[in-house]
Every structure is written in C-alpha cells, then in structure tokens.
Length: 212
Image (cartoon, rainbow, N blue to C red):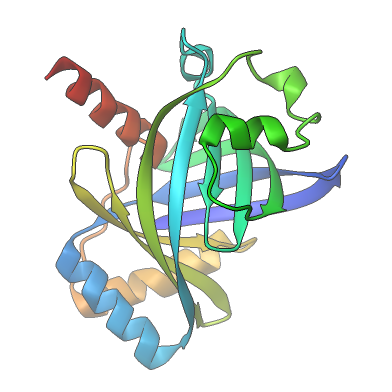
C-alpha cells in the first residue's frame, strides 16, 4: 500500500508539495479483493488510463541526484511533475515536488510537446537538455472510503511485468494507516513496507533490459 501526506501551495502557478509516503506492492488477487471491498464499502469515483513518460539528460543527471521528471498524460490532461529531495526513513518516503497541469493537446511527439509548454518555473532546476528515458502505462481506479480518497493502480512496467498498488493522498496518514490495516487483516493481506519507490523500481527494470 502507498500512503501520501501532501501539503501544497502555489509558487508562480507551480504547485509545490512535501510528500510523506509508505508503500507496499499488492498481488493481483489482493488488488481484486481491495477493488471489491472499496466498491462495496465506499463509493467508486471513476477510473482513468495514464501514460507516464520519464525524462532525464543524456548523462542521467537527475537520476544521479535521485530526482525525477515526469509527464503524465491522460485523455484530458498533462501533469508535469519534478520530484526531488527524496528521503527514506522508517518505511516512509519523503520528497518535495513541483507540479503543473495543462489541458491535453492533440497527439504529439513528447519532446515537441515539452518544448511547446510554458515551463519557465521548472527550467532553473532541470538540465538544459532532456530526452525520454522510458515510460509505463497505469490504470487507476479511484474510490471515496472512510473519509479518504483512495486510488488503486495497475501498472505495466517496461519489462512487461505488472505491479498493483494502493495509494492515498492525505494529511492524516496515521488515521488512514490504522483504518486500512484493519481492512488488510480482514481480507488476509500481509503488510510489507517497500524500500524503493515506484520510479526506482522502474529504473531497475530499464537497467536490466539494457543489459539483456
């Protein structure tokens, strides 16, 4: 499962936030159990397909600093995210991020799309030249449950493997953890904290593919 504590305010039309996250992968069966449970005991809010495209410099400057720059494309929007200052402690991931949302344009090549967007607020923090290093597809189901907005992700990685994850953005992670842990116990789901973020696992898979 994946907990996220988020506080955001605007800086020059760019959302900045500090995230505190704890996460665990689910099996496909556990993902199905949680979908059924949340649909029965909460409210289904909808689902969306996301294309996550990751960029870095040719010498992987962002990767060397444990930073991430991503374009998330849906049917209606493009979310630009730059994550940095990542820390891991006691099963939680903490980072800062800048974000900006744009309406989805017609189908266009990614680097051409990136150059067409007004991203001046990002430029001081990114390499002068970026290239696409890889992408992954994500299907997200969203539920309202117990006062929380809960998201269940089914992610297709570059090596054709599939990951399942539960995610919640909240300013009350302790209360959410207590609530969801009781559900996990009821459904027989074992809790194991992750030691790597989804992006770090994505990079691991890319590296294995390059060596194959």
